Amino acid sequence: MPFYSEKVMDHFANPRNVGEIKDADGVGEVGNPVCGDMMTFYIKVKDNVLDDVKFKTFGCGAAIAVSSMVAEMAKGKTLDEALAITNADVANELGGLPPNKMHCSNLGADALHKAVENYKSKMGISKNI
Amino acid sequence: MKQIYLDNQSNTKIDEKVLKAMMPYLTENYGNPQSIYSLGSISKDALEEARSGVAALIGANSQEIIFTSCATESNNLAIKGIAHAYADKGKHIIVSAIEHFSILNSVKRLEKEGFSVTYLPADAKGVVAEEELQKALRPDTILVSIQHANPEVGTIQNIQKLAALTKKGSEAVFHTDAVCTCGAIAVNVEDLGVDTLTLSASVMYGPKGAAALYLKKGVKIAPQIDGGVQENSKRAGTENIPAIAGFGEACKIAKAELLANAERMKFLRDKLIFELPKSIEHIYLNGVPQGKNRLPGNVNFSIEFVEGEALFLLLDAKGIMAASGSACANKNLKISHVLSAMNVDVAVGQGSILFTLSKYTTEQEIDYVLETFPGIVRRLREMSPLYAHFLKTGQRMKAGPGTDYEHDHCNITEESEE
Image 1 (cartoon, each protein chain N blue to C red):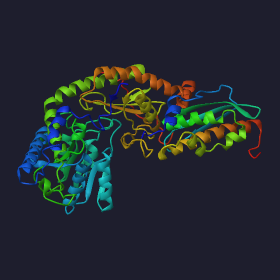
Image 2 (image 1 turned 30 degrees about the vertical axis):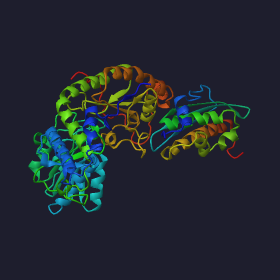
Image 3 (image 1 turned 90 degrees about the vertical axis):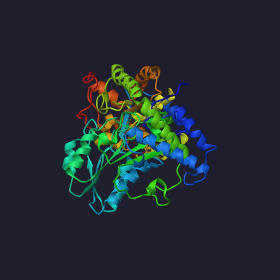
């Protein structure tokens, strides 16, 4: 059995939504203190919905696939729906990750949530709505 | 799709002549060498012929060769067997910090048994300094183990000097793990001055399942597997005759081909070492610059702003099989202990990529790597936030603990002509 699922390899080899949004409404950056991976998410918000999501990632195959999947999952979602995306959701959507790569999925959802929080704080929206 | 195998430090392709030498012992000659009827003696003859083949490769006597199942077993036997045999003389052991895990974890176990261990550092190029050994030697040192060459960064140690220093300053037994050098460069136990030495068939175009420990006459060892009288009662268990016969043949072939193979591999190695930095910026050679102190088939670069596992996965998609010492490529999520001991910056070490060549590697294959690899690096850099930050600001971002961009990298563009 290959180390990564077909879906992980597809998102890694053909990542969707790579890039930066120059005039992003929210930016979230997280680093992994264990392995040194780094992800930056950029979001564009329109009517409370994530109109565009892009990312840049420094990391392994799993980290890149997770970023691509998170961006794809988040696009078109409301802010609250995006915040509700969990690490487990991402891993499931990818058809599972090897046990020692599960921490990569945490990184992806965290970076997205940070970007949403960044947008909210810019707009003066309380975290508790 | 093309299949270009450049992970020969982990295993080599079997030589067809080796396979041919093994076949009779996998089929009609199945006797146990300990049996004295005719089928047994055929196996016994094969065992002893292989033993002289192995001995001849490293300039030893046949009686000084103990067959084992793998290099890990040889190293376990050497480290634990010597420590246990000489425990009444002292309990201090010295190893380098860049040894294989079969050495490092063996001494860890001995630490639990009450032995004390000194770990010698390696410098930025993977060299273990004589002064460090000199400082570490004590009257109660019973064993020193320093690998002949490192599989990851390719640095060849000056074992002759390190062994001589050990002998001058102590009565310690000197062991060297020579898995990377036997079959790759000329190795002679007398010249090196070592007491014990590990070598393995699986990285010299032989089969898996056969390795050896050279044990100099007169050096004591406590067996680590208890059982019958095989291997002069130093390693019990029915001998793996097919693999051992293949090992003997692999050693004979290596002895005949070694110098020519090394010259060819060095040429191809240096082509990669010289050409890759011409098409990839911010790339650093790990280990000593090309030359005789680097394994003929070893190319290890750190490529900034990208991660090694992503590199080798994309290489694999193009049919090129390589390895990496990055944290993400390691099951334990730590940067390789070798790069770590050499103080390679964590963020830069994340981009380590290791190509190890074999006698079967062709110039066409190396050219294909040179054509393919820069595009892969470019692709990953395009999605790297570290690279974007660097392009915008000219500054490097910290990535993970241990970020230290001041580290003395071996810059190939400056040291290219030797």
